[in-house]
Image (cartoon, rainbow, N blue to C red; front, top):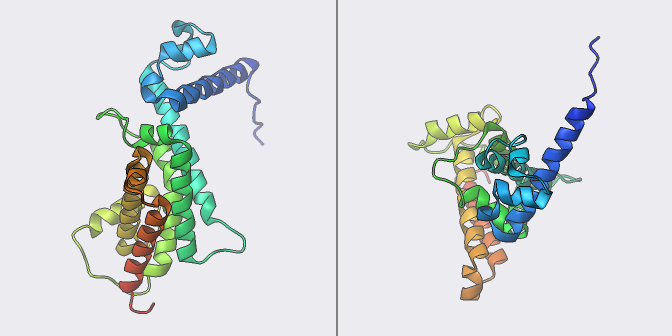
Length: 232
């Protein structure tokens, strides 16, 4: 039987320091946006010199990558948890709860949301760990859509092959219908667009209820799935 070794004191101290660096970095991000996060600014907040900080993160890009991974994981786990209730909800109710949780997280952390989806370098690449984190919620959304859209085949589209490849890449169960996958992408894109506009203040300026707009769009996705399946 193998024995799991406890981390050394040095490693525990290192992990605690990394945790504190990320906490200070998120504080700077939440206060002023991603441009306020630098090795120098975080070092100042930590009471550390930049050379000392480089022992934990070799560059600003590496630090931002770690923040993206953590933010993706928090967003993904929050949305996934919204779909898991006792007693279980039906598929439309789960879709609504996932959308509500996504919107609530974005509004609570608008600058983290911007870091994930807009305030990024054109060359920035998401890590597999980050993608897996945020897709926790997407997988719950796809499962709910599959319940509505699965019973009958749908008309083949040019997107089907790429949708199936994408589903396999994120860990969707075998047999996930291309319709459910397509609706998942459409659902996310509509929700993301609405949330981004809400964060920018566009809907407030128009005098529109952003929560009601989001709920209406999610109902449109649900209705699209149902209309594609004559058995419902």
